Image 1 (cartoon, rainbow, N blue to C red):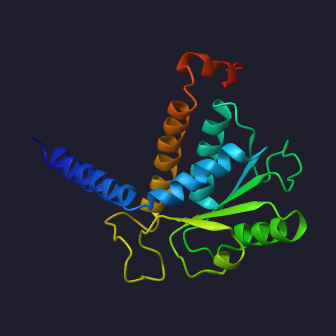
Image 2: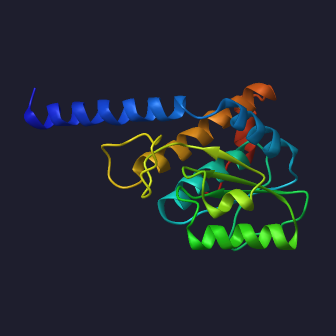
Length: 191
């Protein structure tokens, strides 16, 4: 085995172990509540910035593939949010200006349901959101109970958001007894 291959095997093993530990540490009751909120909403909106935004856009698209009216805040065809909708705010720190501002606006203007997916349970988001799905990974605050990572910056958080979205989508498919083949009717076809 080459030196590069050995390095790759170690990095792969380390990253997958971190993801397994992290996903296994998320409170299942908060996830159950999140699924209930998603399925109970007329529309689901997502907001985040940076790599979190990219992960949330993937989750948004996957929910759309399940026939859920899902939108990303700022997309060109974004409809109005109403009190019957759900806003999912992704921010590890809970202090990112744009997601925090959107959450405040949603609370003050339409009073829709708001869920924070993040790492820091002590952020300003706690006073705005209805509840939090905590992914307890390393933040810039270095809280005592955070899961440390060998990866740069907040990679573990962003990866966990993406995989969590796909895990919950799988669970929704099973709960609704959806036929996987029929889901293609929601997939883009101008590819």
